[in-house]
Amino acid sequence: MRPTDLEALNEEIIRCRACPRLVEWREQVARQPRAAFRHERYWAGPLPGFGDPGARVLVIGLAPAAHGGNRTGRMFTGDRSGDWLFAALYRAGYANQPTSTSLDDGLTLRDAYIAAAVRCAPPANKPTVDERDRCLPYLERELKLLANVRVIVVLGSFAYDALARVVTLPRPRLKFGHGVEVPADDVTVVCCYHPSQQNTFTGKLTQPMLDAVFTRARELTMPRARPRRR
Image 1 (cartoon, rainbow, N blue to C red):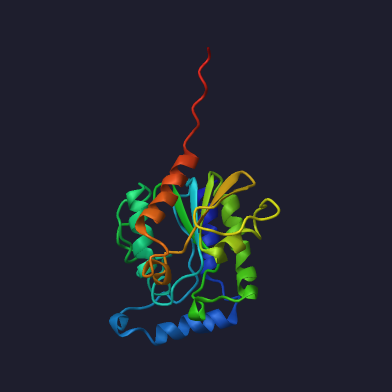
Image 2: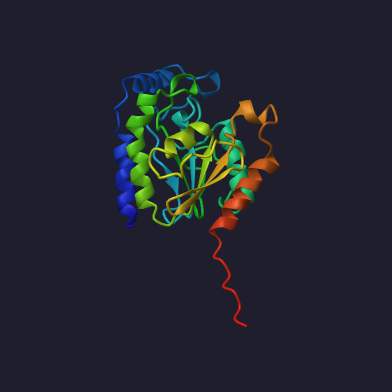
């Protein structure tokens, strides 16, 4: 895979205006920022994936947050969900730092790549089925370009359902649940509760639970030792 192929896809994603409701919402949010961000210029557009083009681990979220990724221009950057996610990626050795605050904060990912089922911030964090389906070709093309991916971590049932439309999962499909592992084509899907405040504040998702997911992802991408000859 040539890096320019992924870069070209990302440029295409950034220019997308296929969903009128999402275009209107992402731009309205930018015109009416939260008081804490009133001096910032919002990204207010679709978010491309980012990370290591040679990654063996792909993380898929739901969609950008209105005042998180939609503001900063990077997935899971500048919101509480991202605080949890990047701290876990750092502890697992996939990120060079535990925080992600802006495009120029120095963050880099090693052996990991982050994408989303929907690339624009949706009202109430709820994309429609049609909006999801219009966005899925981007994820499908991303998967083809990220040729080294062996583990896909889906954050939440929405991401799991979206992924099921672009890869072949066994039938009957296993129900989403934290820690559930599903074989899919030549990868393993690992399910994880989304690190949203709804889950982290209530204790439905804890740091050890999130760490265990990325520890398992690391295990699944390690080369298997050959049995010794007797």
